[in-house]
Image 1 (tube, rainbow, N blue to C red):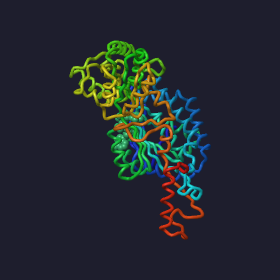
Image 2 (cartoon, protein in one colour):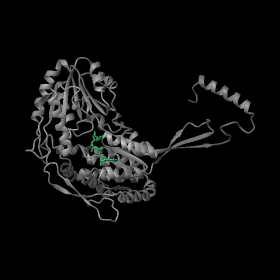
Image 3 (cartoon, rainbow, N blue to C red):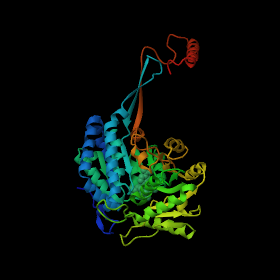
Image 4 (cartoon, rainbow, N blue to C red):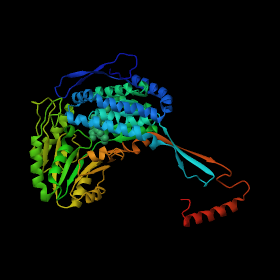
Amino acid sequence: LFRSTLADAPHEAITVRAPYTGGTIGTIPAGTVADLDVAVQRARDAQTAWSRLTFAARAGIFLRFHDLLLERQDEVLDLIQWETGKARRHAFEEVLDTAIVTRYYARRAEGLLRPRRRKGALPLLTRTMEFKSPVGVVGLIVPWNYPLNLAVTDAVPALMAGNVAVLKPDVQTSFTALWAVDLLRQAGLPPDVFGVVTGEGPLLGPALGERVDFMMFTGSTRTGRLVARQAAERLIGCSLELGGKNPMIVLAGADLDAAVYGAIQGCFASAGQVCVSIERIYVHQSIAERFLASLAERTRALKVGASLDYSMEMGSLTSERQLQRVEEHVRDAVEKGAVLLAGGRRRPDLGPLFYEPTVLASVTEQMQVYAEETFGPVVSVYPFSSEAEAVERANDTRYGLSASIWTRDAAHGARLAQEIRAGNVNVNEAYAAAWGSVDAPCGGRKESGMRARHGAEGILKFTETQTVAVQRLMPVGTPRWMDAAVHARWMTRLLKLLRRIRVLD
Ligand code: NAD
């Protein structure tokens, strides 16, 4: 069932372990540069036929995939849970989002990419059209935290636009990616149009970037810089979805219960291993004490554990590396005087990589957790006294991915949102409102990324524009029969006229 695109040669095997138990899930082939050669070449050879299909034909495949995904969700929910250790409710978010984005681009790609008539150089005499053509082979590199969603939801617009793609999933979550691509093939996607090569990122990532026409990267800011540097060198496009240290602001008068519930979702979904997770909460001082008490109590009451049903509210961390990072951030903070209000411990009794959902107060700039992305179930809570202070502190970060504001006055919240330097701001929701609004772009500012997924931008980036202008009757410059000085005089008069009346703008 699980086929990656492989050259004819023996491959070393990489063992993948389940975070819940530490046991072996299976082995994946350690892909090589020769495998990438094969996958990219096969994709290139398949592109002409694929891009000549009608939008309706391509959309049919993705809508079938959508239906199969919903029907067979239990298979992939199990896989996601086995590979990431997240709770089933958080794995289901991936199914939901993948279906929504797939339907969106299946239905909307044609409209977003249709040729557009543009105003010509000379009215009536120049007929100008703008066309969008596919860039060619899109390379996709994705991390382990949302293995279904990130493997599919950027590929769908790339493929709907007539591109072909080669995916390099993370070693930890390759089975989920292979399952998804296999399901796409069962839905009718020609196999070579979307290749997968599994294996180590530091080897395959740069080699993929060397061979493709566009790089779509999701992962850490550190690796994103390498991808951007290579793309710059090769003068190809790239789109980067990177890290965050996302703030939540709770204004005086906000619905406290709703804000606490939102914080729990925002901080602890997928054990905090979400790029848009909340890691900093700023609460108005008038309600800080009540908010903290309620957040700490609800956090302590969360059902944490390993289970393949919907009973758990938080699962495990995904890797030993993540667990160590979380432990280190909390240890460092507590050593330097932070107060632990909930959590703060490993839970080997639940599984080898479990860590309690954790709430910290009295965090200072000297602590790692203050500014560095933890990417785990740890949140720091700070009181503030004025909105200006809250905005300033929310913006005091090198990241700019997502933010959240809680208020009873939604219109005020939406205005305040525009002062936050982040690509996505949610009012009275932690992150799902902006992320789930798939008709709008979703991307990071500052060191959180470049360009965006979702909406028109999420597909236009996988295309190149072409302007075709057809001239008739007379040339754009000086006509043969006219003196250049006369032409210049007339044109000057015309420009002055156009400046005064708006007819041709
Ligand atoms: P990472 O950068 O270490 O790895 C991401 C991917 O890059 C993996 O597939 C890895 O194999 C590959 N890779 C490794 N070295 C490479 C190289 N030299 N060249 C090219 N690719 C290489 O990231 P991670 O720590 O595994 O993932 C977590 C990070 O991803 C967090 O910072 C998180 O915020 C971010 N993230 C962002 C989004 C978003 O949409 N903005 C979504 C999910 C995760």
